Image (tube, rainbow, N blue to C red; front, side, top):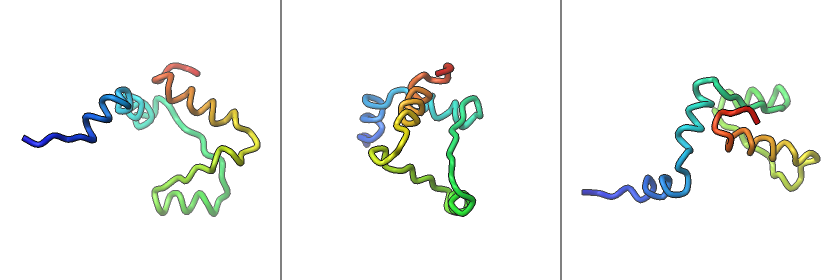
Length: 77
């Protein structure tokens, strides 16, 4: 019998992660990502989003809002 340590740690430290991701995947919750057309094409082409470093952002409240959206488990933030 093998033990999946990553799965055990996820259950301890990220118990609601699957449910939160499911609400975004189903379309019940959405992210907004403001960017240039060139960067949007790269996101679509590569299937990746690289958020910027929050310490250099002008409006840190976007980070707080995003965090609230995720931690509210689908409830309105």
